Image 1: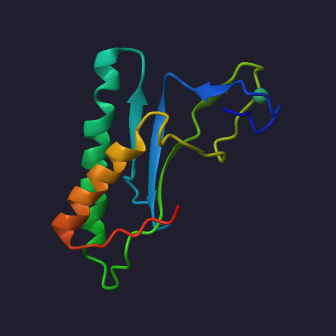
Image 2 (image 1 turned 45 degrees about the vertical axis):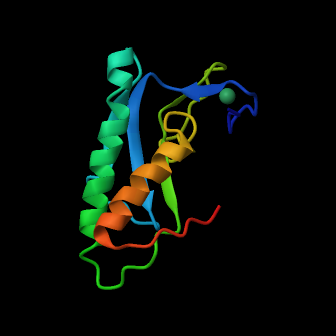
Length: 125
Ligand SMILES: [Zn+2]
């Protein structure tokens, strides 16, 4: 990935950090979870952790009066490292879709929850 500071292709995800989930521009207070890539076992906890958070989100969102279709899903982190040593601001967000979470798996997880709560998914690319 390209570093926003030095513009080199030297940016990679940290081995540990926090993943934020924002859906339709909304993030729950609890809409984040820790990731750890230091072992295969810990990496395997990523998908169940995401699934649990998506379940929480849909449960919360289903209580809204105006349940607009889901058009925008962001799964991102600020925990990135540049080989050149650039400081990456906590405000910079980098998508982990297709980096840590294959898009197909995310779409599958979303489809299951959306169906369960009767919410439409109309993602805009
Ligand atoms: Zn850099």
